[in-house]
Amino acid sequence: MSEQDVKKTSEEVLISANEENEKKPPFQTPKGVHDILPENHDYHTYIKKVVRHRSRQAGFKRISTPIFEFTEVFKRTVGEASDIVNKEMYTFLDRKGRSLTLRPEGTAGVVRAYIQNNMKDLPQPVELYYYSPFFRYEKPQAGRYRQFWQFGFEIIGEKDPALDAQSILISKKIYEDLGIMDSLDLQLNNIGDVESRIKYAEALKDYYYGKERYLSEDDLMRLEKNPIRILDSKNEDTMILNQSAPGFEEFLSKESIEYHNEVKEYLDVLGVKYTENTKLVRGLDYYTQTVYEFWDKKRGSQNSVGGGGRYDGMIELMGGEPTPATGFAMGVERVIAQMKRMKVKVPKKDNLHVFVAQLGKEAKKKCLPLINELRDKGIKTMGALGKGAIKHQLKLADKFNVPYTILIGLTEVRENTAIIRDMRVGSQTTVAFDKVVDEIVKRIGEDKLDFYDPSQPI
Ligand code: ATP
Ligand code: MG
Image (cartoon, rainbow, N blue to C red; front, side, top):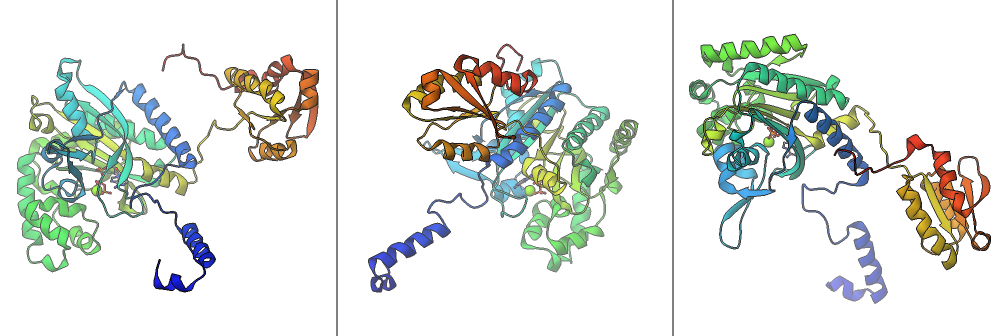
């Protein structure tokens, strides 16, 4: 108790403590992480359905890798000089002193799984998708969290510009299905092979040397370790400086230029529009050749809703045989925010059909099996099983916005009947108890029932 509190009466202390509590409950989520409340789960469910549908159409199979891996899995692939490895990983030692990391991204784990499970023996390419949470120790702000969800896919085992074009098309289709593609711009680049990147990095160093005073502390570090990453800086002064920096195009080999032209030809055939951005780089070091991102037309790189590209060197880097690959990842929270900005509503199936109101223990004995049977028949049912006046229960039924309420009181128990109340018009009918389920099914309509049929394929 503080000195000030001593002067207060015990009641005052209690009240002020309660007021404090009202302001902020004692337990809060850590900074940068959030509950997904039912309203946002509707978006997640919808997005998951859309991505699953598009993934299945393309023959992708779902994979879930563990939430944590040995730290080396990420260090080796994402790159020692990347922001992720440098400062964004949740790394900890387990009880035996082994270094583990909460996965900051999806590709490294999938590649580790590809090698560990000998997926090279499967027909190639192996096409996998995931929908999972990821963890990065970032400065939390709108669209940037410490736990966030990504949908992503990887196509491992084959290389062709046509595959790059096809991956881009699938991601674009998903944004279209989600109703946000009109607000997005597809940015496309080719970042060449390792040799071109070494040359390009040197040219960038020459460009930034002498301009250090405009660079942030982070960008100064990038200048030494990995100058190409400066192009992805979100620092305003650096972004202005970046506009006049040399682009990738001058440093690409003949093969890369040809590869890039072919990707663009296929995109044209598919009618996919893109913006060439010779300074587009990705946040992870493992990319080669084709890279792309989907940006909000108004906000640009600040609000990338997803991106991907080719990472041909990674499987070998992880101890596998040299194997080409390409992949894509989409930030689910940013997509939800974009859907809300674009006023895209998600259709939902959560609405209840029936509310069961009862009075007394004998009524409850009839209601419990009735609720069970209604649900089995595909009627979404909620029962008021606590105590409370019928009037109160009807008010509750109103709040749940159900079309029908079934009422069973003392009279109905005695006469073996039930009342069906149509909540929209307020009319009531009494029916024999053993006819209630049939009557409700008839009124809701067979086609509206929510059935789980275990014999159907998943
Ligand atoms: P940014 O440049 O915005 O930091 P990134 O290049 O680090 O993004 P990727 O690693 O390519 O992002 O991840 C793919 C997508 O995941 C991003 O386009 C974005 O939509 C989303 N994403 C990345 N980091 C976060 C985060 N901290 N919180 C929410 N979404 C994120
Ligand atoms: Mg980032």
